[in-house]
Image (cartoon, rainbow over all chains, first blue to last red; front, top):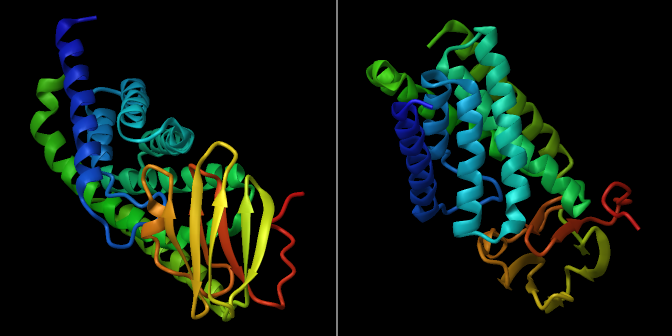
Length: 164
Length: 121
C-alpha cells in the first residue's frame, strides 16, 4: 500500500474517532437512544466520495470498534455495527445510483444508521415499543444528514485532489 | 444539491408527519406500567399509586424507577451512559423508556390494550 494512502487512512480514522468523542461531550437535552449529531459521519461520507466505498467501510467499522471500546461498554457495539453496516450499504447503493447528491446520500446514510440501530435494539429487548422512537430519530436524521451532506460537499471540493 | 435531494427531504418529512399522526391518534393516558427484562415480563405496576421500584439483575446491575402522579421515570441505573435516566418521564400508552445495556424496557399501557406484540414468554 502506498504510504500516502496509509497516512490518509490513519488521518481519517483519527478524525472519525475524535469527532465521535466531541459528539459525546456535547450535552443533548432530549437524549433518545440513538439520537446523535452524526459528526463522525462527516468523515465517513468524505471518505466515500474521496477515497472509495470499500475504504470507507473499513474506516467506519474500525471507528465503531474504537469508540465502542473506549467510551462505552461493549454491549452497545452490536447496535452501532448494525447501524453502521446498514448505513454504508444504503449509501453505497444510492451513491452508485447517482439519484442524489452528497446531501441526499448523507441523509439516507443518517436515517439508515438510526433505523438499523432501532431494529437491532427491538430484536435485542424483544419489545416493539422502541419503534415509537422512529419519527423523532428520523427528524434528527434528516436535519443532521442535510447539514453533514452540505459540509461534506464543501470539504470534498477542496481536498479531493490531495486524497488519492 | 440536486432536485432529487429536495424530493427526498420532502418525502421523508411527509412520512414522518404521517407516522406522528398515527401515533398521536392512538394516544391515551396510561393506566399501568409493564416492566420487561430480557424480553420477559418482569412486573406490572399501576400508575395511580406512587412508588419507587428497583430492578436488581442477576449480574449485579440495577435500574430504579419511580411512579409519581401517573408519570414514570428512571431515577437511577447502573448502565454507563444513563440515557434511560436522562429520558423524560412517560405517561401515555405505548411510551417507553429503555435501558439497552441492562435490557430493561419500561412501557406504559392503558387498560384497553391487549399487549400482544410486546411480550415473549
